[in-house]
Image (tube, rainbow, N blue to C red; front, side, top):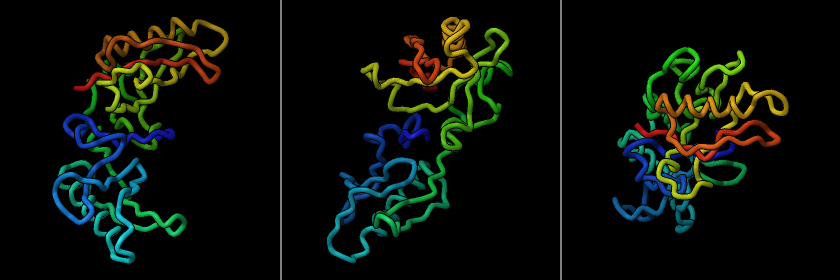
Length: 216
């Protein structure tokens, strides 16, 4: 996941997440005011009370989160709770959420504009398994990684919006700016992103930034 926690889900699931956490259980039990969460793609179970010692509450709260997240369709079945021998923390894993992203975004426009591979799932394969192609520039195919973060569509601060390197463009020589502008314009016209994006050149590449994926 490119070092980013992208636990948040599209559509109706967004309201269940705060700061990349899925609030899913309560110390002592109960169905509201949850204070136990699953954090990040690695499934860390956080907020469980340490007391009573050896009371089994870590497994209880983890399984409670698992049942709720499965029932609400946030994760597929097949995950389990396990304690790490290295740090002593509880994890719910593996977290299979690919199905929620399967139909995200508009359909492909052509073999040069849209998802690549055509049936790939955004935010899958560690964040790099799905590309979003944005046209040809000077004979080279351009794309960005397709990693929507649903925290950003309503972001008021520009610093919280999306950014992604545009692959297929030269860094120091060539027409990098027009290529990036063409990529952004293509994605906006095709309905993948909203207006308001910008292009910049950094030491690590050409960046399409300050954009928002269009939530369908």
